[in-house]
Amino acid sequence: MADQSAESVSHAVKRDLRLDLFRGAGLWMIFLDHIPHDIVAWLTLRNYGFSDAAEFFVFISGYLAGFIYGPIVRTGHFLAATKRLLKRASEMYVAHIMLFLLFTAQIARTVRKFDNPMYADEFNVHNFLEHPDVLIGQALTLRYKPVNLDVLPLYIALIAASPLILWCLVRRPNWTLLASAVLYVATRWFDWNLASYPAGTHWYFNPFAWQLMFVFGAWCGVGGAASCGSSSSPARRWHWRRRGFCLPS
Image (cartoon, rainbow, N blue to C red):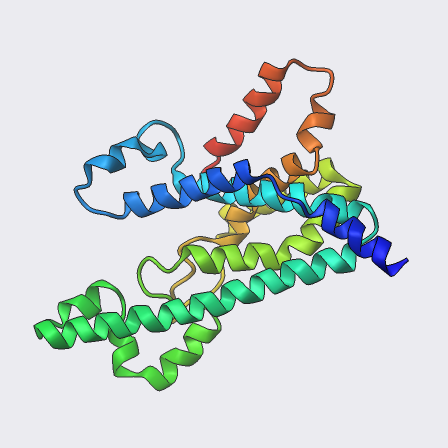
């Protein structure tokens, strides 16, 4: 029985490499968008629509979560899916901390080599170099983040919340999507966000707002769009998927 259960979970978690390809393309576009005066960056999404590669990446990530782990939750293996998702989130957390340490060490080396403290100020590392005993704790709690290290903490938060999101989507997909939209509107109205460091600052990528893009992708991944638009034309279903990318963050 245990072998059959493990085989069922292993079969359900089989992933579509085409989605990984598109998510990789999204990450590549994010990289290009952060290179100043780069001609190749004119090929990225931000130049031709209402969204950029960040929305594309979050949507595809949500779709993957729903597409891969939705069937596992639906077949009664919620704990197995939760274990995999939380393990994934913990691995990304460790990767983020290691990247943070390498990033700050490289900036510190550059500042010393060129004797130019402006590098530390530009990348928001000056406070860490001045007070590493305080800032390391803030970094471990994801409150302190240097420049360009904001996306991964958002992804960690979304993946950590995925078990609850998928559990709700499998049972009440449309109501879950509606609740996500209500949370988005309330976030924009009441200015909800997670606190950051220093005091008075907040996360650059607000997880309470970006969760809508992630949940919308997961809703599509678990079959919400297919069931909702089963009586409509394929062009109309594609229209609703595209509208998700127009949501402001």
